[in-house]
Amino acid sequence: MGKFRKSDDLLYWRFFLILYLTGFAVGIVFTNLAWEYRPGDLDALTVFSLQEGVRIRGSGYLWYLTRKRCGSLLLPALLGFTVLGSYAVIAGLLWVGFLGGVLAAVVVLQLGLGGLVLLGAASVPQVLVYVPAGFFFLTVVYRMSERSRLEGAAGRGKYREYLLACTAGMALIFCGVLAECYVNPYILHAVLGG
Image (tube, rainbow, N blue to C red; front, side, top):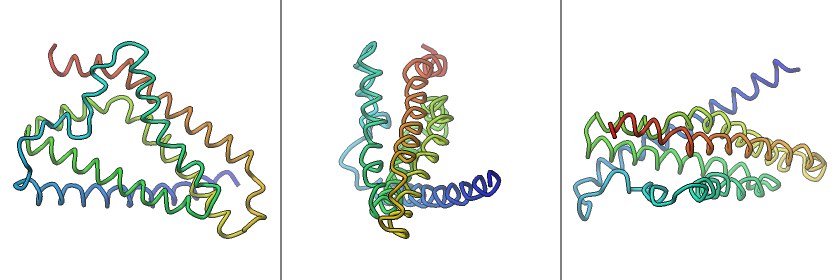
């Protein structure tokens, strides 16, 4: 049964990756088409308010990142109890992919290919935790939502298991927050040569 479940997870993860990459491609195309119509120069690091965290010091930065990263998971977790959970996962992956594509395109258009090095440095090591933890969390939400849709009230009997899995997913995301808060600044400092 363990092998079946792992292969089942891989099917979900492939589906999630396709959704993310679709949104990513649309974000790149959108940015390239809209680039000449921008009102002025955009600072690549402020496109999605990434600089807000720079002004926050100490444990305030940890709290800020926790609210931003883990707080955004509460709505999908709640929607996982309903048939809307699967739609929320799909829409969320397309949206996050779109934003990632826009960010990558803006960085390349403004800073050239060297901007990809900066983007990579800004993403490591937390992305190594966020991606598998996020896929795990989204798989849990998607499965519970499917169970609600296909089995009706009979499929809703696994609330405790669902809440435990959601909590585990959020705990893993919090590990990524810790990496982003306490490890990533040193990597950025080294890359920026400061």
